[in-house]
Length: 234
Image (cartoon, rainbow, N blue to C red; front, side):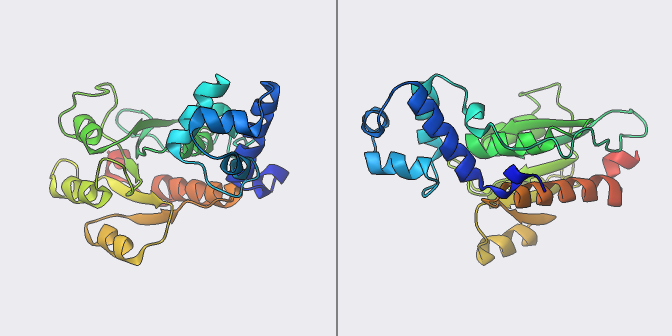
């Protein structure tokens, strides 16, 4: 395993936050005033003692004038580079993965992990409305075909992830899509509900990058190489 795979995601983000703060000549107190938290909280972010919220991550990206993705520089996403996945037999097209995720940090991390797969199309939406516009009404991202897999974070700000599973599995045109729940915690009640309504898997987001990366790569390989999906077998 590469050395940076042993570092936690929060450690990598924290070091990037500190580096960008120092480059701009700002103190902890300066940053704290700008984003509306205590200087102790900013220090905790930089020391990886506290997980940073999505809203504060956005505030810091604006303050430091960088894209959110820059806070994750250092994550090693090259170990799975150029992994070829199966294609649909009739169309010879790539596999489509729909990600339903509203945390910008987690979105960046997952996309980095998946970026090494050569023929995997990844689209991210952020709530139930956007999900149904893509899947059912086809009014959003109309060039994105029906997904083969869905990665779903059940803890969405504006939507109930379990309800999204239920609605997809009740739709005859969508119910064959495999839904993998990817969430920050193992809640037995939520887990049972997810499987009850038709989820195909449940992955906990690990703070250790190497572990989380391994889980996602194993998941993708299983659903695209170990088993045959209806869309791939056509």
